[in-house]
Length: 305
Image (cartoon, rainbow, N blue to C red; front, side, top):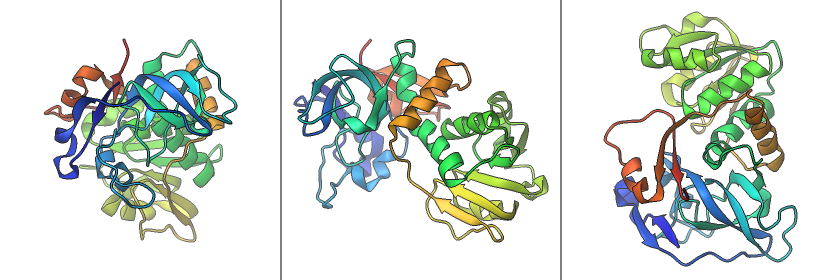
């Protein structure tokens, strides 16, 4: 099969190559999926699991990518809940070869059914940002209707999902970002916008929850605008920032079939939009990931036409 591989961590995306690799086989509780569309997260080549296995042994060359939509072609021994020919989407294991290839072997529990009226491209754009937003807001942030939420990077891939889900849940949403992102953030549902380059973050008053994607100084400053007993949720790694008598939670997203189902139903009902930027075929994936200018939205690789 054709697949994108990486061999040299120092080379980053410039070291990606399109090569021939053996087709994967389904282990116990696995399925093999014919990949139709795949997502790639811009910084995943800096993640240790891209380069080492769970025993910390080198596993390069590895196939990156952890989001997919496709069709099940084979079942491993003991696999239940899915069937050959079924359309699926999901978030794959960090430590195994990923989705930027024509086939992938993945644990069945990491996949959910993809309804026939949802395009594979849309399906592949949902798992990472959708699950990150869902888990950050509802599992870790325990968001309640009527609360206020400050969403950093509200026009971004994750932030736009956070904004929409928070609004749907009855929250008052304040988005942040650069001035050029104001209209996009408001379009995704933010009711106010803070330009982090020109506005004073501290002027927004108190909020119940901050969803942080930046870390560093922004996270520290954000803790100061959270009401007493509120929560700072971040995906940018551990932070020393903590709201008064409140919680700071940093987390890594996990696959969850039932949550994927909730997310895709909102897409079908028109209540949730994905934030797709570039769509490129597998032959042009390396060029797409090495574009000279920073592109907004998520890059999706269409593995099959």
